[in-house]
Length: 452
Image 1: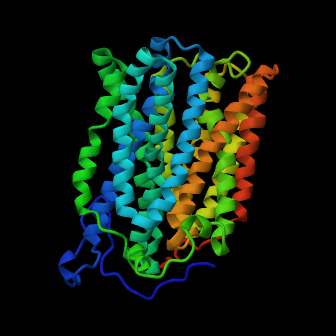
Image 2 (image 1 turned 120 degrees about the vertical axis):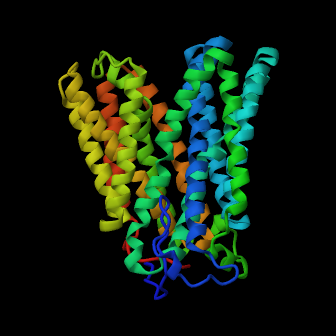
Image 3 (image 1 turned 180 degrees about the horizontal axis):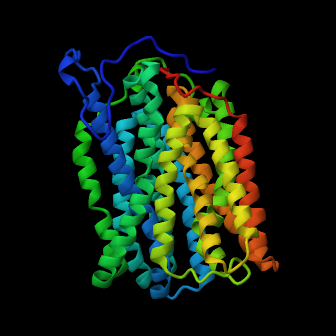
């Protein structure tokens, strides 16, 4: 059922970027009460936690070609290792949700960040082990990078936690309209973390190689652990903790009102990630391939600037739009326009840099931006007892979609398809389908604040 507005009024409106005005008119908070300052602090910590988690998560993909060259892997072996890592990441991301629904959101954030940091350190160890024990070292590397899926899972924990804090802080429907925009700024840690990862490789790789990059990536977790002392558990989870527990959160996620959200949003997310792999992860291959768009798009800095600037703008826009027309409708509109943009790019004349890059940027804007609305929509779509579990199942579905897409692209290109043809059927069509399928999810009015 839809959430209903609460009649409780909040004296202040928290902001992640500025102190609350007229704070002197606030009544002193009751003992143990969550204050506007607590919510602002938590918002900042979640932003940095996500930024650092992304930093480690994308580091492996960026450094994989260098690691493969040093260890003497053929391209097929490198791809196989990455596929196994992706599968392991999905399993870890899936497992985090039920744990967080048991132990709490605050502990879940700290476990995710610390786990990703430890995995980053162990990546360097596993890389060295490959040179000593060969195949066993590769197995160790896959296990370690799978554990780094805790960093990827951190976004679903963030979404559940901030959804509940914002529900408490913005219980007045008149103030609820900024929740999605604020969350979109937290989610923008993805492009920021990606830029930091690229910058660290540029600075550290000449000094100590790929291993030093992974070692340094572990240190930001110290900041989050120290800052974690200021995180307060969400009031919704605290209330739920004292209730009698029925079935496990994993079972509950496939029952009652949670079932529709788990299945519909999860399948939409998985389908969309089939397209994400084609255009966001393998985009440079498509753009530069002679049977793709035949663009001499070899400057990695240009690609980085375009993709991450587009992602940041897309997050903020779709967060803002979701506060006005609803998160579900925003996601559907964005992904349908994304499919149209990429289709137009594929139909545009090959070699025309300006037109192709403009349409590619538009496609990324509408592909990546809706994720800020989607992750917050997850929190609105589940009750507190299954919120983290449902979000983690949906989050893990993205990695499943990436595996499916990688398999289909390999199969299609091996069968003689051109990059443009493969990108349309394996990229555009699933993205279109994800935008239509998400409309089957239960709609939630953006000004309704769910308190259960």
